[in-house]
Length: 166
Image (tube, rainbow, N blue to C red; front, side, top):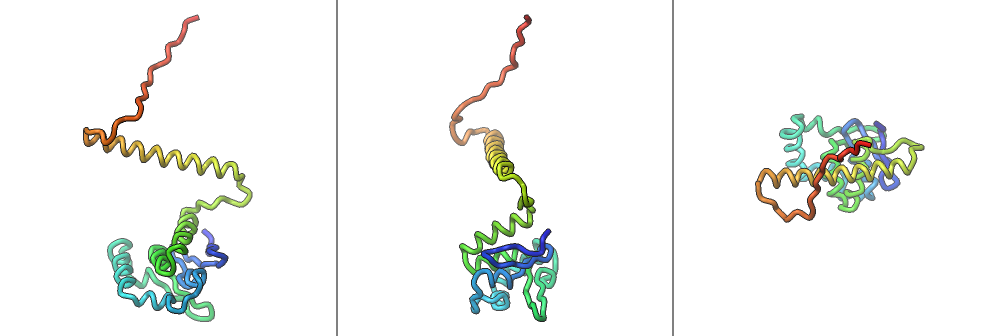
């Protein structure tokens, strides 16, 4: 996995599942009132970080935050916290950030030279599979309840094809 992602023309550093809050802050416009250290001191941030550390990740808060000091000082945080910080910085920025970080973490970025037609075909197939999975889940829930939630739009009957003996 790369150590950098490109976000709104800025490079944001990564360390495993940690994202640079400083990089996000710079990519969002560097509003002095929204610096990572100031956001980290907010009660809502402390509450979220505590819950994430204790309940979800079962780590200490020191393990979900990391501060690199020196010439290139940066604050890093677990990606969950980084996404919360992105929402704090700007909702529109957060949406772009979520997609880029998610794609990167899932390694969904196609290798250089990968045919565009194949990417489109994979994307369409993925969409169809997701749609069918939702429909199957809905059918399963309806069967479990024993009462259809809406009338069936159509019925499919499959019969074995008869072979002709010639």
